[in-house]
Image (cartoon, rainbow, N blue to C red; front, side):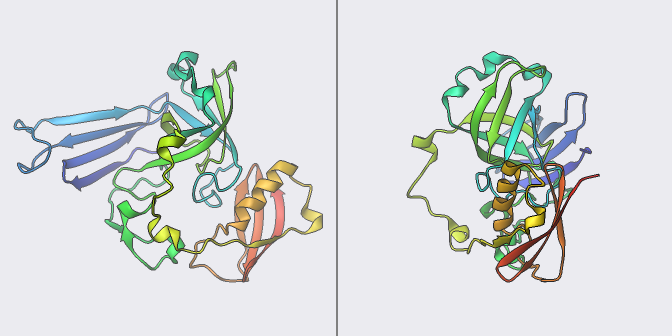
Length: 275
């Protein structure tokens, strides 16, 4: 990932967020300089304050590209591993985590860092032609490119050459994504049955019928094929693309998947190893 700088005006002042490459992985540096006397945060000396976020881990999975990754976590049974950076491989830091079934991941949209931000975005699920406030969406194009996902913790592999490794299911991250924090998911607190879902609750979720020709079956591992069908049923295409003749391609678990969509059916056209 290349270094990038973002200038973000906000009610706390002005942030400059800079991603700096270093040997152990990228660092996010958030500089804050308060210049507004009416700011909620007062600093009469106008000194610049900084917060440095070190990646504690990266994710390893079968998604080398953004296209095809589930739009949210837990929509498909995608498998992944969390590999900690050397300085965070102390097993004591994970003591007790095995007692939880799910965890929160705080991570960076490392492929979506921009020099500027927009107060409104076009959510793909609204067809790409309606605008919503960026803070009312989960768009990756944010003032601070931070993502939040809940995933299933299937097991902890305590002794490996790379220290403890977390095995997770349901992640919506690209391979190599830096992770900045991990927290346990608390169902009695984090799950709110009375919560409203805004525009996302009324948008129809696409569920396509996946046609998988017999000669293409059994090329992949059966578990990978099952997960691939889960992903394809959700229609990976942007909502505004609806050309029945267009052939789309996505990479998953070392395979190049070709498909096209006509009305409510998705046809798998080819599966070839990535070269």
